[in-house]
Image (cartoon, rainbow, N blue to C red):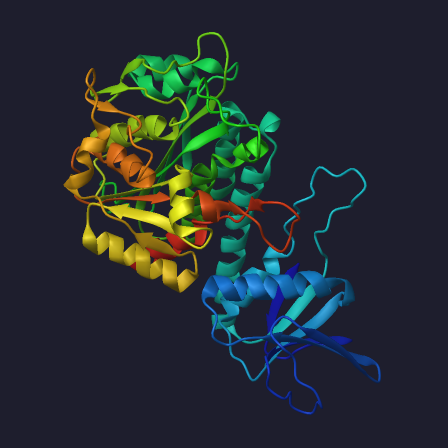
Length: 461
């Protein structure tokens, strides 16, 4: 899909018109409900009308337009004009939705050719509109990169493969990437990460990416951390077989922060940004992490492992502690498909947000509303400290009571922030991999890329 901006639109045999739903269309005798479309032939020209509501959030608008574009693209000619009737949506959002229609979920099907379109869409405008299209393309490509990584089958994306993909992305976008192997991980004392990966034949990696967009400063403005569990069986505390195949998505946090870095780098935003991804496969084998073990984490704090299926917080604990010690960031945000409790609390509509800083929390929340990648603030009160009690170690990785699981996980991560005053945690399983209109089962959404990119754009752009 290509989008070209021109002050004088070329000749084209078809015009695609986004029109306001439930309102009579100019020069037409009909109106369309939201999500409906109509193809009208007038001589040699065809007009395709697409009905859309005008009260949608950014993400809702992207999803609605993407759905409409996706189910009508077979009607499009190779060159089409895009216009609007009774509605003035943000062109960047419309363009991003258009670009997203090229995402190929069925990449492993042998009988389906590439759906990537060679169509060219012409929109009237000037330099301002060209800039919007350029940003939309970067954001869409970054989001689709994250979606593709999450949707990739687990046999093709062990921790080392995720590290290799990060290196390819860094080379293409222009940021530095270091990938530590297990030997280096053990040497550095990232013991929790190493322990989680013990049950797999595919060793863990520690990925550190760096973009220095503000050469006037040597400080780290922001660290983004992503949980990179390439597949999660639950370990010795093994999960039920039902829906276990969806656990290929347990690295969606890693995909989100890497996709965000790709956007930020290509947009050349003036920020010094680091991304940390501790990646492991949580599997079952001789030597796997055992319930009851005590781990000496990177921070020096000891962890009693109550449940090996609470492994994401273990790898993030080492990543957070390492970032605090070596990068000394002004702000820190981690993203993780961490708990089923977050889904039970908020469904598939929002991620759970925890933060040590009210101002940071409010900015993330507001950007969630703006982009449609919604988050909801949750408590980190001291009342929950006792949920981490262990008789034998500093903390346990799972509370004894089957309640407030998402809060307990956030409180666990908080321990390893060394009381950082500007930290936030997004617990996002329900929004990162979910049912949608493009597939018959769950698939990746790329959640977090737009939210974090928009947040960084507003704070540092």
